[in-house]
Image 1: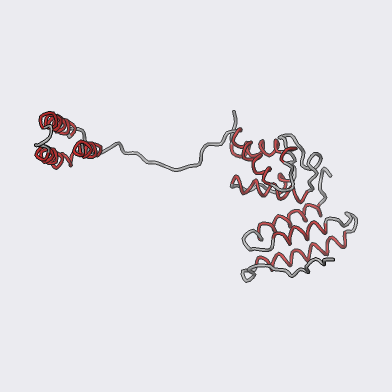
Image 2: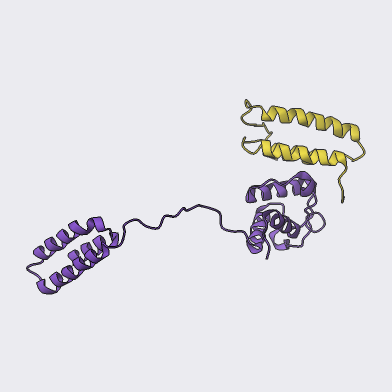
Amino acid sequence: MAARVLQQCVRSFARPSLRLCSSNLALRVTAVQAVAVHRPLSFAADSRRTRWLVQSRIPSVGVLCRQYGDLPPLTLETIKERVMYVLKLYDKINPEKLQTSSHFMKDLGLDSLDQVEIIMAMEDEFGFEIPDAEAEKLMTPEEIVQYIADKKDVYE
Amino acid sequence: MLRHSKLQKQVLALYRQFLRAGQDKPGFLPRIRDEFRENSRIKKTDVMHIEYLYRRGQRQLEQLRNANTKQLGSFSKPKERG
């Protein structure tokens, strides 16, 4: 039982450099298991050894490739969810009354100072600067989503 | 209030700079918000007062940005009971 586990562990490496020592391991394993069920285990060891020999033909160098890390791609849906989530966390907004089309000043009763704070929270969330001239025009969550989608080239 | 006047835009820009500068140092943000909210009550026509407060705010922003300021605290009087 333990021998089978050992064999599986060695097999999972699948390296031809291990071929020699793994065949030794198989031999040693068969020697240990001499008392127990001997014949099927040795047969299995033999077949595995031949399989390893066959596998050694495969070149050990894998496909050369570069890997980069990046954030998950933005879609309109994810932008909208993040914007609404940030707005719900703001303590001056009632989460039940919040819709995508609710105007900050007319529907939610905020003033321009609050609107500056909200835009700053959006800047922190999405990681890019929004200039003042355009920031003061964004009055509903829908407009914020549109603006971010424009800036980040997200379209469907 | 669809379009802000020049002065309003300046005040909002100052508010934004204050919030950015005060993010890392503890104790400044509540004071900034209270101060701006308190002064938002003065009339739009009282330009002298607004400009005075604006210049004062700019000087305080320079103080805040100075690397030597670390935090802000305040004393408050406990509420009288009975």
